[in-house]
Length: 114
Length: 110
Image 1 (cartoon, each protein chain N blue to C red):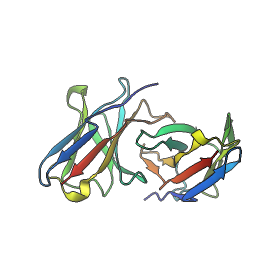
Image 2: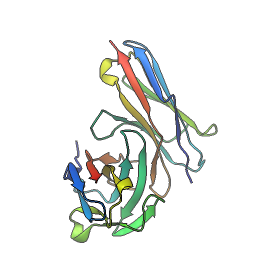
Image 3: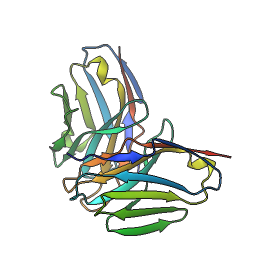
Image 4: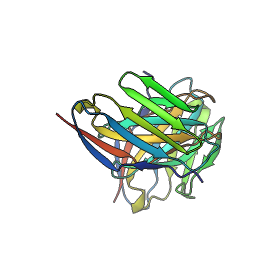
């Protein structure tokens, strides 16, 4: 089936540093998401993105977070500066259209802030 | 603000049993209702979805939706050890935002 690719699978970073998480969504998909999952439990919505713009963001999407998809390439989540509580698995997801289409998830990037 | 709750938190059933997982939501304007399954360390994968009241069956899985009760459920017939996973219900709003419940950990014992 369609695959969402996330690079890297694991990243360790010092608190206060910047990190960029990369996502290669399914090629014809138009809607993109980032989710945060802690301890393999609740999948928490961060942000969704369409046509170059943030559509909606949650209160977890702090001012230190930003997303972009320059020139239709990777969809990125940047955290600057990172904090200890940012340690989690971050999942990128995408879907093709507005109707009831499946949202496909990548395998996640495990971010550890030390 | 959409609030999605799942029950039970965890469930252990014997192989061959019928399993029922529940999900409630708060926004009556929600459009689409999904069940996802996530094996440990893997990406969540959609199982099935529904958008109108009633039931939908796909193989051993049945999804049931009652919008008036703000409730939908997943039923697994003849549960298998390979069904052991974290089950996440998800509700999609008109804005496209997909909100997940906090999950049910299902363990099917051989």
